[in-house]
Length: 63
Image 1 (cartoon, rainbow, N blue to C red):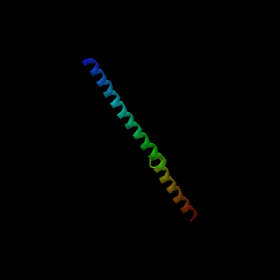
Image 2: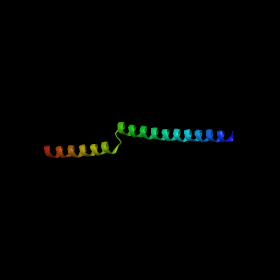
Image 3: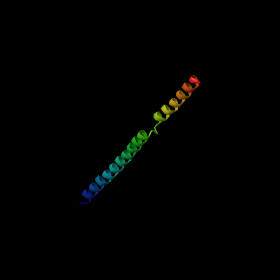
Image 4: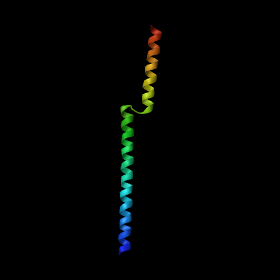
């Protein structure tokens, strides 16, 4: 009986660890998607910087 109780405890512990891992992965994914939508990822920031530089260059050429 005690052996069965130990196995049930181990399964519950495994389920708890798996649940926490899935929650952590889900949270990381939500943060990644949010940063992408808002434009805070590194590619968006770099593209904005390049766009600003190109706009400055085009203004200098027209003047």
